[in-house]
Image 1 (cartoon, rainbow, N blue to C red):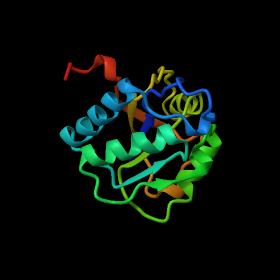
Image 2: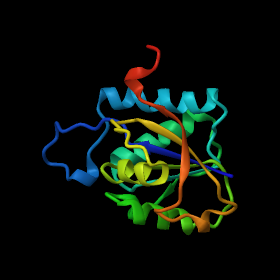
Image 3: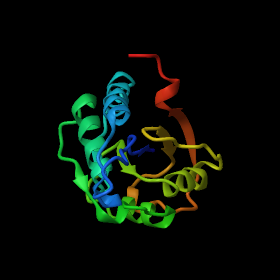
Image 4: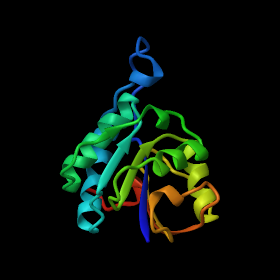
Length: 165
């Protein structure tokens, strides 16, 4: 069994119109929600064995805050293929893992994450910013994953549904 964690990056700011989409920073809500989700991973015993993030600034910053608060001890891997990736690209990133770490956390973007979650579980669930999905997959190795792989949505956490800090 493999455990996949899908996290949509935390809320980003649109204040600085000089920044490209790729370079947008987290806003105050994003800076609050990302650490909360990291603590949730630690408290639920889902400390990632590996974190792979989109290269977009908002995703990288989210991943760094998650890593710090979850107790993750490795280095966050940046992967440009996660920037606006669809389900096939997300599956490809997982298939190419060199490590057998478990769970694996992907920090990426919508609509690709929502579509991937739906393909894997058969359930459509909206993923607002900083939402975290926990999926159980009946796989021995990550290279076996395909978009048509079926798994179970174990839990889904949205920041607004969590207890206030």
